[in-house]
Amino acid sequence: MTAPEFTLLRPLWLLALPGVAGLAWWVLSRARGFGAWDKVADAALIKAMAAIGRIEGAAFPLAPIVLLLVAGLSVVALTGPAVERRDAQTYRNLDGVLFLVDASASVVGNERWPQMLTMGRFGVGALGSRPGGIIVFAGDAYVATDMTTDHRQLGQTFSLIAADTVPDKGSRPERALALSARRMDEAGILAGDVVLFTDGEGLGAESLQHVAALAGRDVRVSLVAMADLSAQMQTHARVGGGAVFTLDQTDELGQWLAQDTAARLEKADYPVLFWHDLGRYILVLALFPMLLLFWRERA
Image 1: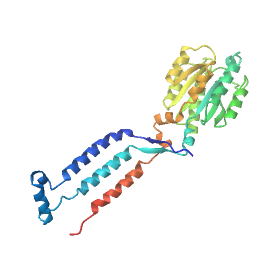
Image 2: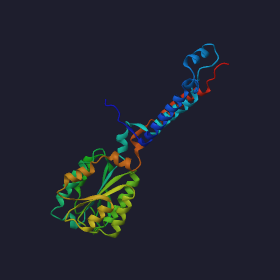
Image 3: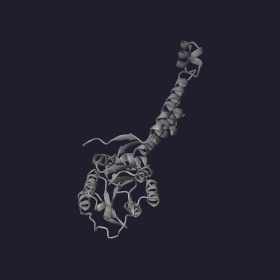
Image 4: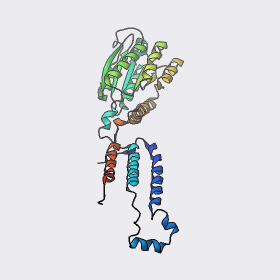
């Protein structure tokens, strides 16, 4: 069994520790001896007077030291020491991928259509633990496969897409993008990918508006181009925070989809999904030294 990973969620708080340590040194340095008398009086005289009870030894500065100890423990707690959750892999499934496949006549009838299907199956194989789904579109958009971690099923669905899969004529990628946003919401995806397989037909201002909306909710939009790259494709990828891939870039697509999903969710302000913050327990530990402040010596 491997040891859990450890991290600090808020490491900048470590900058406060030297200040606490310096303050503690200053308090202890001033607590030595009998105030400042031991610096100006004869050492033997001080020792003799202490022996006959004429002076008392310097009291240990309990209260300041306890408060400084509590401050130090509080700073350590605020740094957010954390261990990786055992169920972190489950939370990673909140980062999903939707493949939007243009099944219009101009795409399915193209001689490079089998190559596009192969590209899609290769993308499915790179998902790792991420769930994926497929939306097919032409004149309208439909869910072919809902979000699932059954990647074998996804690959088989890619193989079954044909000219008669979508009865509606035309090419309306904006409808597929709008449907993908709804499916992301329904599946509870916090940060995901949309990959649009297209020949560029139908891309325009309306589809670009949907791409911007997806990017605004931490979903990257990338494109797989059947034909040569166009300015519209480049613009959609740039607005969507994604990339454009040609049909001979299977490795690049796989690497793009296999990126560290934990890092992406953490950038989206969800690190608590992966790490168990131990700071609260350290704060409870800091309460115990404070009990010493209630200590009273007998008169």
